[in-house]
Length: 293
Image 1: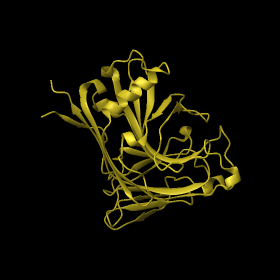
Image 2: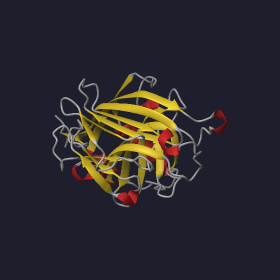
Image 3: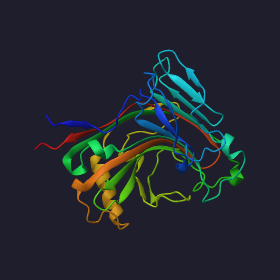
C-alpha cells in the first residue's frame, strides 16, 4: 500500500489561529486559541489584507461557545469556529460595506480579504514528482453573498467577489511559482469559467501567474448559495496542466517535477467593492499518495 502524506497541519482547525494585521508590514498582531484553549499551537493564520477600518486585533473580545468553539467579531469581520451544532469547522464573514463606506474602489487600490493561510508546506511534504495522486477534499457552503454596488457603478472586471482556494506551486530550483486556484464561488457566474492572468492590481501584488481552471474540472455541479458543495478531486493532473499553461508565460519551461513543491495555501473571501458574505468550511484536507518504489 502506498504511503500517504497529509499536506495541511491541523486539518480540523482545532488549534486556533494566528492573526495577521491588514498590511504585510503589520505582522502577527495576536493569536486566538482554539477549542483546546492552548495558545502557541496555531498552524493557521487569519489574514485580513485591506481591512483597515475594523480589523481583528489581539485584544478583540472572544465570545465562547459551548463545546469550545468561539466567535470573534468586528463591524467588518466575523469569525466563528466549531459552533455548538457542529455544522462546520470555520465560518468567515466579510462585510465590506463597513470598509468601503460608499467609496468606489479604483484599479490599483487595495481590496478586502479574509483568508485562512498556512505556509511552509514544502518542509515536510514530497515533490510533485514523487506523487501518484494528490487528493483534495473539502465541504464548503456560501451562507449568503449580497452586492451593495449601484448598477451604474458596477464594473464586472473590477468589482468581483469570490471565494477560491489557492496553492502556491513553486520550482525550488529557480524560485518561479504560480498561484494554482481551486475555484469555488464567484458572484458573477453560476459556474466559474476559469481565469488566467498575472497577480497585479495593487502595490504589494506578487507579479506571478494565476491559473484558475474552470470549476467543472474540479466539481460536477453548480455552486448554489445555502447549499453544501462536496469537493473530492485528484489535483495532480490539474496542477500538471497548469504548469503546461505557464509555459506560454515563459514560466516552468525546463522545470523538473522533482523540484516542484506546494509551498503554501490560502482560502477565503476577496471582495473588490461593497459585498457582504459568509462561507462555511469543514472536512478540508489534502493528502498525497507516494509513488511505489
